[in-house]
Length: 376
Image (cartoon, rainbow, N blue to C red; front, side):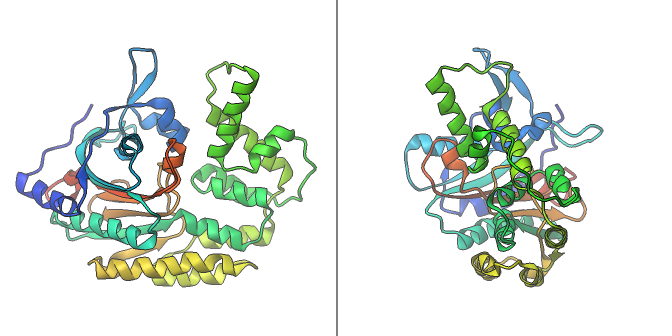
């Protein structure tokens, strides 16, 4: 396992300072996390990036790839409605083949849970990541912004059939699925042949559909075989049902989605372009666009430089639990594949972990990348 190089204590202290001044309590996360949970929440594609180990009871575990899930689980176990936590420790990810990236590395970050304060809280966390990154001394930083919920609002503006809209929203975090949607020949909806259960599950968010399947197994005494996880089964049933029942995007709708995904510009220019691409229910976008006005004003107020920001509508992250605003702080010297800091909103995570619905937003910074003298 490749380790990252240490950085000077003074540089680490400067990068750490914004987090320590954020009014959060100290938290930790178990180094070992359930593999099945990580894959259910982040997607099967994450498996190749995880260090997997066998637990004493035979359960497959993984070294934590980051702190968010572990801190969220600890918050739920504490039984508090509101929590703001800062952490510092090592995380672990398998480097891509042929890469020289560190596989054990230091992260410092914050996770905030509580009322869904929305855009102002998003801006506060993004500004915190920006300050911590800049404290490392780099002068080539930029802030890349995205928004999963903005894509959902844009899809709503197209006034698609509900199953088709749901399928398209789910595909946003899976580039290959989204490409398949946009590359497919437009076809009309076909009569259902997927079965009542698949049709029922297709009308639910994937996490709720998984819970329904678990309840059906418990009620009927069914024991799943073959190692297939409920999330995998649900996803396959939903994809099959929606493909048969919802038809495909029309040529005009495909063009509209492609146009949306191609937007990448200064934030206000990008949002102006998105507004012009809206479909017949343009009002569906209004709230999302107003939220961005609040975010951008708050970011400027908190010291982030808007001239160094880009809003890219097609930007997403590997961790599939993000469902709102996303961001990465990038360094020109390190390139796009090695972000200095990253974070975003993930309101849907706590309910998926068995907790109560709440606002959730967080970020982390990699000190070794933020440090101007570092290369990883």
